[in-house]
Length: 163
Length: 163
DNA sequence: GGCGGGAGCTTGCTGGCGCAACTGTTGTCG
DNA sequence: CGACAACAGTTGCGCCAGCAAGCTCCCGCC
Image (cartoon, rainbow over all chains, first blue to last red; front, top):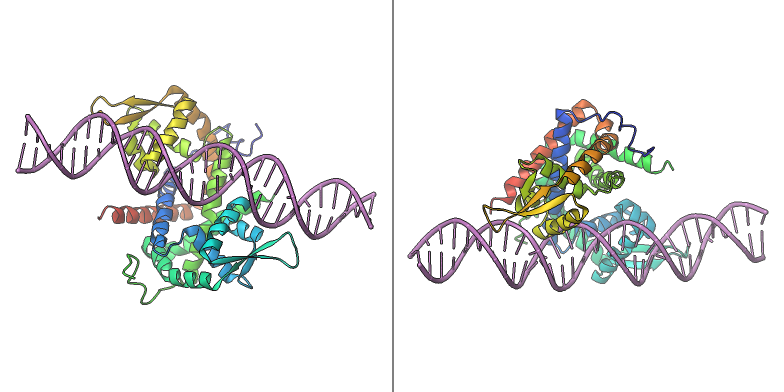
């Protein structure tokens, strides 16, 4: 008892028809959507994970981010990021660098090869996102989609840092 | 070059601001949302994967489905399903059964324990879905969410069975 | 000023899943 | 009828990611 989920045990407010449709469609779609993006990216020798790393690094001030910050943005555990970077370092896209300011910190820095890989893949990836997702929606749906996921994302973030 | 994605290489139609917002919010949210559901389900000793198996079996005619049909609905590879069922059989929620009609086929059948596990978890899971997702949206947003993901899902299905 | 708590990263272990290869079964076509 | 393609499921292998433990290093507090 007193779980975060309980309180509903008394009276489970089920989903109405519309909610049900939204939920089922979402659950059944999300996985396939992800693998569709992954498949399209293999052409460039990248995974979605790799691609996101490249994007975040390319947007960072010195093309570099602290591991922990990067991990948070990628929603990845520390160990997960360590290993993903292992691969990307070996591929030559990223360089590890010790921070001068805080010697605990490891910086992940985008290499020229990494920037090139991103530039090569970006058009294809955007096209993929359009083809599978964006271009299937009208302006209004895109607008609402943004609202939905910022709202949900905010909610999740709010909950997780209460403790 | 000569990729399936190409045709866009000539002129990469980038995402406008709204599309960008929708896409980023989506990507950054989806993972956390999934793990939120998973965390809430651990309370009942289930994963999202287990839960979905239970749901689909409980909705099937004889509380049973062919492995391949189940795999398709779960968007899971054959081997993936084999192993997931291994766990669920050991947990006593599902029974394997040879089909009389087609001896290649293995049926996955819901046990009474499985039905009970589902009934126990369902209210909490629905509450979780409400808390993290549905109740953060208004009626219209829910409506549009259903539209979005049925449209995208249809698109994905259409593409994948062209070959 | 040094000491304890906590932050940041890595490593060993484990579990889940996809791919490819294999077995057994069915269906089809000459 | 007999051969061959296609289908259903399982198994070996490898990859990726999370958790827990361990190391180094920072910082606040006595």
